[in-house]
Length: 120
Ligand code: AMP
Ligand code: ZN
Image (cartoon, rainbow, N blue to C red; front, top):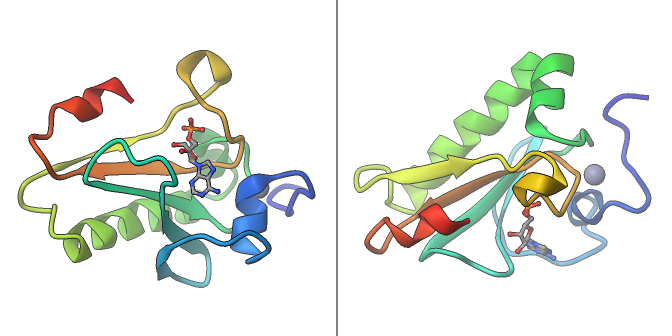
């Protein structure tokens, strides 16, 4: 069924707290945690707790949930104090575009000079 946890999914395991992560924010429907291999001074991933393979699939199945992920990204940016200096939100979609974890997530990148993050 759409949105159901997948046994072999890394981010479903993080959502279930079966694998540790540095969680920065949580709601009923979303989780935000620090990327294990940061590409910027602030590098946080925001995921829907429900499993979808990519961001567009979330938006097509549950538009409200896609909005909640984006709203949470904005709150993380405020808490990390990059909302005024600026930040990037990146949704890699498909292995050809660098997606390696097939549970929808948005990268929030900010801080520093703001330029090296273009490489992600
Ligand atoms: P993507 O390449 O867009 O699929 O992004 C996946 C991201 O997940 C990469 O930036 C990884 O560094 C990150 N990542 C992989 N494993 C973990 C983990 N256990 N905890 C936090 N972030 C992770
Ligand atoms: Zn998953």
